[in-house]
Image 1: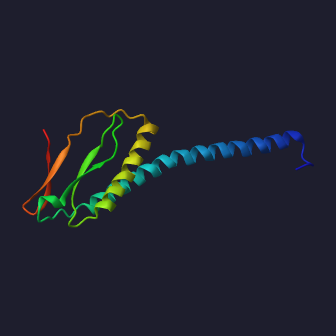
Image 2 (image 1 turned 180 degrees about the vertical axis):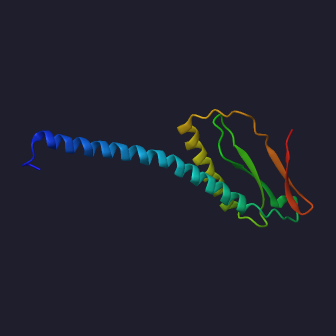
Image 3 (image 1 turned 90 degrees about the vertical axis):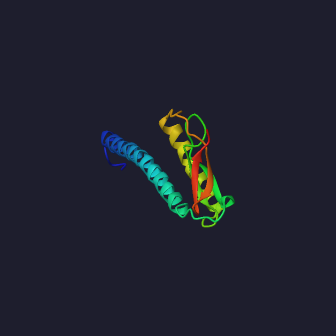
Length: 134
């Protein structure tokens, strides 16, 4: 490049810099989509994990706080049966979802403060079921 005139050198550097800046913007835009996809995948995994709610007694039914609202508290609750679901695995997955939602809330500045009623669970007709606490 030493034999090129300085104007050409500046043009090459400017083009290269512009390309790097634009590619950085493109990767930033996709990272938000990847994060949303990851959050969607995590929610899908949790729903599959807790889908078998069969039980023989109410002590097998658990309630899991999932996600994070911008104003505090969980975004939802998941009811599951410890007869069919590992409590530790369900809690770890819920924590991952909560972390992703906290990141998303900070990035997007969401202000969803609508109340989410806490639920309890009971084994009714051999299925863990939720009911709202009033």
